[in-house]
Structures are given as structure tokens and as C-alpha cells.
Amino acid sequence: MTENASFRCGTVTLLGQPNVGKSTLLNRILGEKVSIVTPKPQTTRNRIVGVLQASDSQVIFLDTPGYTERSGDMYKRMRASARDAAGDADVVVFVIDASASEKLTEHDRRLLAMGAESGAPIIVVLNKVDRVKPKDRLLPFIQDMMGVQGVAVVIPVCARNGDGIDPLLQEIRERLPVGDRLFPEDIYTNASERFLCGELVREQLLLQLRQEIPHGTAVVIETFEDARDEDGGGICHVEGRIVVPRESHKVIVLGKGGERIREMSTEARINMEKLLGSKVFLRMFVVVHSDWMSSPGALEEYGVGT
Ligand SMILES: Nc1nc2c(ncn2[C@@H]2O[C@H](COP(=O)(O)OP(=O)(O)OP(=O)(O)O)[C@@H](O)[C@H]2O)c(=O)[nH]1
Ligand SMILES: [Mg+2]
Image 1 (spheres, rainbow, N blue to C red):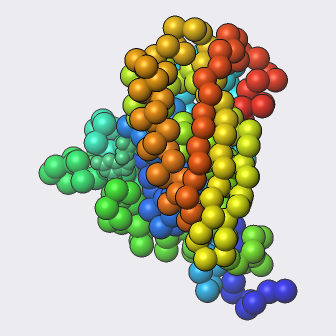
Image 2: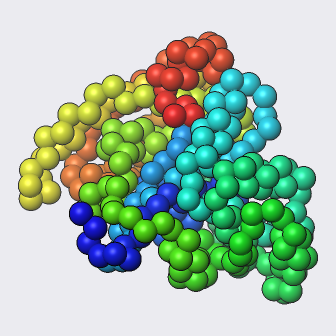
């Protein structure tokens, strides 16, 4: 039932190149951590749903993998995931790292064209403006954007400290269709706790391992036993696999005497305890699966591009 005739509900897809701050922006908007953030590109591997609840609207955000032209089945699936999410949008929020270059790149233009294909209006977010000095360095960007098909408005934002978020949300709400809630009123994501725990492990792999190693890893949580009490007591028992493509990577992930995996597991466990609001027992095993990044079955099982 419509709560009132002007209630708005719609889907907003966050699109952009890797590392521009899409996931940071989503977490900032929600005030909750639904999507992991690291300084490395290709952090997000799937479509992540975050729901912003308000008295006059429900905004369903889709965070997507940064659009990369890298070759390989894994990146192909990640591109498809972003493209599909763009197709579902009522509004596309196209995020650009305004500190990385001074004008639109060809890659951005191709991506904007993909966003425009959805027929949804595009709101361009110029992110990381905390790093842009003086601010009139943004002018060429804004000028470039004026002529781009589908672009409705350009908004400078700092996802890290929240500057510009309120005007952005206002622009988004105005463009959402009138309609009832699609998700229950009391949730901010539809991701399972099991999935989020796996992401917290992957976040540590990205943060603590160097160069290409974390891009070749996947995480699967196989056991998620929830023995929490209502009063925050009890424990969650979480166990899973870190999948690597070769033996030499396993040695790196384990570290000397198992030190590296212990450190990563400790950090991931602390973050899981914050997420779950209880103590967590975490155990991760490292296994070698040589061609997982090009095996459709493995990519599906490990949840890449879903
Ligand atoms: N200075 C500054 N850094 C930011 C801002 N927003 C995000 N970052 C940083 O940019 C890096 C990438 O952020 P993410 O949110 O993971 O970027 P993403 O676009 O989701 O990346 P992928 O998932 O790889 O596509 C992280 O180190 C963030 O802390 C910002 O407003 N200012
Ligand atoms: Mg991301």
C-alpha cells in the first residue's frame, strides 16, 4: 500500500572506473559499511545492494565493480555485472576521481555512453574534491560534462568526509519514480552476514598483500554457525577457504610460520565482531585452485560478478 501519494522508491546504480570511491560513497550515504574499501583497484567484485530508508523515500543503491578493460573471464563477469546493474537503474550515479585527471578520459566517455544506454538520467559525482586545489581545477571537467548525452547534473563530493552528500541525495530523490517500498523498512542491505564476513577477509587480503597477489584470491565462507544471544553474548563460528591460483601464492598468504594469515585473520575477526555484535571464532584455510579465475563454475561458486 502506498504510504502517501508522493512516496518515492527507485534504483540508483553507482558506476565508474575502479578506485574512484563508489563503495566509499555508498557506505557514507548509508552510514553503514556494506561494501569493502581499499586503496587497490578492483576491490568490489559484485553488485552490492545498499538501501537508504527515509520517511519520504526508499533509495536502493547498487554498488558495482569498477569497470576495467582488463582481459580474463573474471573481469568479463565483473563488467557484465556493472552493465546489468546500469540497465536496472532509475538513476545512474557516475563517479569520477576528480583528483586523478583534469578532464574526462576516453574510458569515462565509453562508460558514460553505457550509462546513457539505460535511458536513466546520469548524475555525475566528482569525488575526492578534498584533493583538488584550487577548486577551479574542476571547471574543465564540468564543461566537458555539459555536452555528454544523458548527464543531468554534476556534483562535487568528498565521499571520505561527507561534503556534497546532501545535495547529491536531493538530486537523486527528485529523479526517483513515485512508488511503494521494494525492501522492508528496517534493512540497509540484502547481503547475508556470511557474504559480508567473506568480504571482510578479502578486504584484509587486499590491504595486507602486495601487488597482484590479492587480485588472484577468492574467499568462500563454508561454515557460519550463529550462536549469538539476544543480549550481545554468545559467539559466531566462521570458517572458510582462501583460494589462490598457485602454490607460491599460498606461501605468501600464509607468511613465515603462518604469521601473515594470522594477522589478516585477526583484523578480519575484529571487523566481523563489529558487524555481528558478538564474539567471533574465525578459521581460514588456504587452498590452491590453479585455474579458478577462468573456470565458470569456480567464478560462480566464489561469487565473482554476481
Ligand atoms: N582523498 C579521498 N579519498 C577517497 C575518497 N573517496 C574514496 N577515497 C579512497 O579511494 C580509494 C578507493 O575507494 P573505493 O571506495 O574502494 O573505490 P571503488 O570505486 O569502490 O573501487 P572498486 O571497488 O575497485 O571499483 C580508497 O583508498 C578510499 O579511501 C575521497 O572523497 N577523498
Ligand atoms: Mg568498490
